Length: 496
Image (tube, rainbow, N blue to C red; front, side):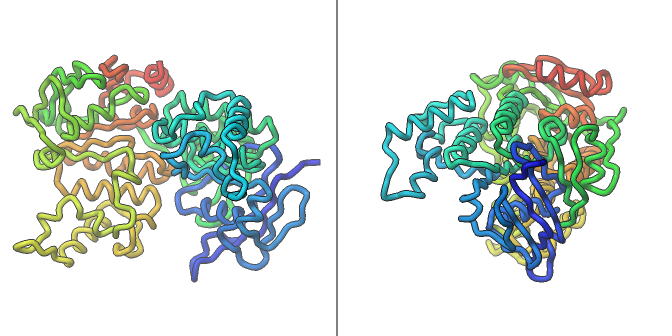
């Protein structure tokens, strides 16, 4: 007889006239690692919030934990009492508190009149750290930790709260391959201890590697629940999108003159003696492990950091940037890997986010912005990039990850750049939206724009780059044509 940690049946969730979930059922076995899959906007987060007691579903729903009785709805307190915890993508850790204080925070909040003593706190924290066999210093400020270690703090915190069911929202989106492998080992260790884990990820290879079953949602409907054994990425992509998502390698292209060239570019402690050129219409892949110098080179090209040595040439002429404003004026645009914090102003409207890079151009003399010109610019780019927007006056935070990324692209394309630097442009973007973004990238290259594509995903570089530079320890280790190797070999070279 199967022991279930959770059974949710007939879940319908409406927001006004919109149905975010339509008669969805979901079950989770004790100790199971289960994937919740689907494109952005399919209802994954809504289902998690219903199970976590944040949303109250329509009548007819039943939610039950373990052998207990099911109910039509639950409260957040009910969920916590049954050991349900969610680790959202932003982690919600406190940077100014220590590791130990973060891990025991929930215990303190639950009993504020009985504060946890420092000796007891450290003992409990050390027990959890030993249980997971991880490297964490209880006295270290969380603000000093890497994203990967903050992820571990978040996991330890829910274990301190006696978690029985853990939902992990895009847990590997900002991790290196090595950090991802370490996290997956911890997920397996949690499973072996009888803790059920619901894994939400757009990285399908990880899903098939670590999960036993996958439940697929599409447009608020349950497509089905399937064993991962025998499931392929291609089949799972089709279940998620309803269509075959297949991208052909870019193939031979004809390029124009050199648009940007760097010679012997060096910044102490970050990269050294980096030289390359990108021609008009070319997509240059820049790859390597996290810390190899990829983003640091991009920030220098964008005027955010100053090089200690070397040259940057635009259309054959040496340039020197004192700031990113200088780089923008020269025709360079940079799409940051951190879309949420650096790419967009989440509480501002879609219109304002689109126009922010060209406000001076849209102002009527002497300093007044013309609302009609703002709206016209935004509407134009929404149409050109096929962005799904119900009302451009809404905050950009209401959009899915893929549509938010299109707005980031729009704000930079509005500057009419000669060189576009894309730093991990599909982080947190679902499989269907990825294909759409790269269709835009290829179209931009076809117009003669020079593109530098930074990614640690071998499949993206192999499919979309015309040339590839593999970085290691801040230096160019190897240059190759992706067509000369298969994807598996390229991944091996990147991770060597």
